[in-house]
Image (cartoon, rainbow, N blue to C red; front, side):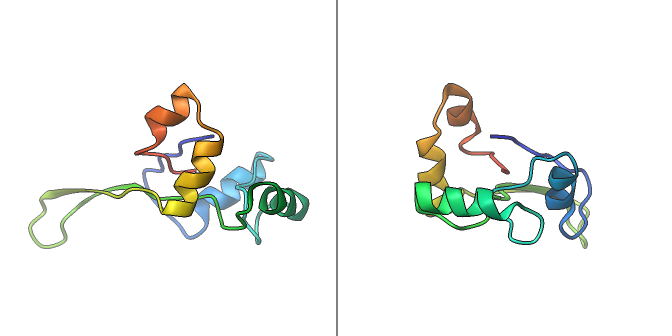
Length: 98
């Protein structure tokens, strides 16, 4: 498991960077590896992209105030995460981005 914290964002940035270093995100049909995605879907019953944005910080466009939004990962993401639960994963459960 890996937590990614980009400072700026571009479309598919995380997915492309992970592919470039030969660590594609599971479930990524465009930038991932088909055999890994198929194995993961068969073994763990989940074929979704295993990427979750759980925290976002930005300045409000009108007031300029700092905004900090947080969200829990979706249920299927949390279910898969629980399969690989470790001490580190437990700490990341609320802020995991991959």
